Image 1 (tube, helix red, strand yellow):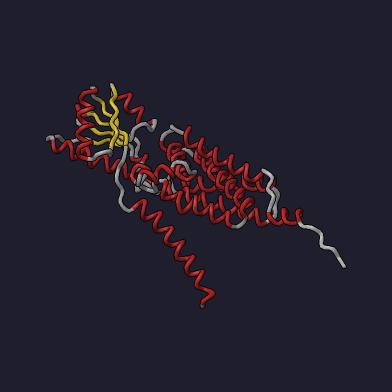
Image 2 (tube, helix red, strand yellow; image 1 turned 60 degrees about the vertical axis):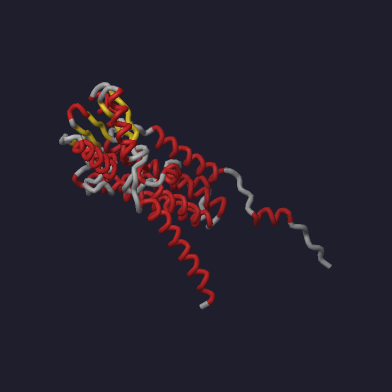
Length: 320
């Protein structure tokens, strides 16, 4: 029984880590810095900003636009989460960019309009597809890329493959996983529809990046590298990305961490590819490329393991 106590303690600590990360990040969503465009003169936009700041400090960032066309373009380019036309009593949202964001923005601005005796009209310019009316498929889709990315790196390591062979296997697996998963999400379920090739390309980039990083960590650290990868990409990466809520509705410091990890940026890249015609992909793809470079360096740079170093420095023992 005593021999099992360390295992019990380890499992308990793992459970605590999952609960602290997921529940801590997602249990009490609050908006912070949500960008909203206002089609109105600068003075009116400033008044709206001041009124929102008094009601929900730090929740929204107001940007003034001269015309509706420019504001709609900003919404499609992912520069703002919604557009308010106060003179028309109209709100334009994009639920495909985040169900939580569009719901919260609609509730807040509808309440403000009602307080002023107005009935606000709401238009969803970029709606979620019927196959994902809840807006949660994107998060689980990324999870379906994380697990294969980690698994193929571990399997290639156990097979004793060389670094070049590992690189080739990870690349091949990334492409096949991406093509299969994109087919399911787009064609079969209609959850991420209309951009199969783009979805497959981004999916392959996410899986390849994760596979490279995990393979590099395993090569340098051994088996503990798998645990470190799981901690970064699952325990921290998924909730720090905002999960189904979005990064602007979890604690700011945790969201900042999430935006430096490939999970959060991969989720953004997939959403923008499918629902916004590939807008605002520069930052997500740059983050993925940076992580892929780190993984490649870990996989290819010479590593002098302890056992080899000990054998090289050991002194011959004289024989009587």
